[in-house]
Amino acid sequence: MVDRDHDPGQRRTLRQNAAMHLMFNMLADELNTHGFDMKRTLKADIDIPWTGDTVKSFLWKPVQKAQLSKESTTQLTTKEIDAVYDTLNRYLGEKLGIHVDFPSIESLINKN
Image (cartoon, rainbow, N blue to C red; front, side, top):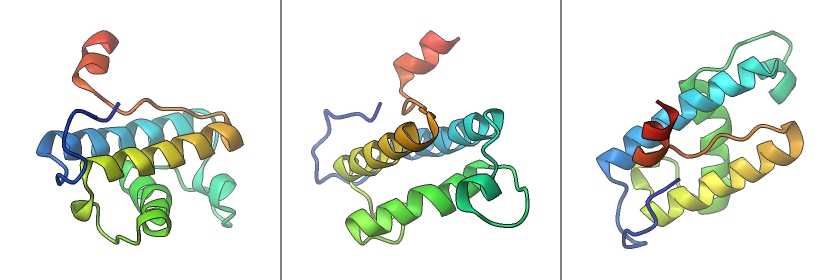
């Protein structure tokens, strides 16, 4: 889960950046595990497994741009990361039955 204790106008932290990229990789693994390759999810003509980078480019960034009119994740505030994550997570849950928690220190400790 995103750290909601920060000032909503504050730029993302290094820890948040690391958590975002970890979530991209976790979501890629979950999509691949459930058979949702990029072709099936994006309607292309070739089977391409998801990676953290493709999750960022083809899922996260289009939502970010549509919702916030921001091109780069470096421009996001802590509150905006919450907003993009919530939108993407809700969509993937409704359409594909896929859900990945946003990484936190607590969730990583509990996972181990």
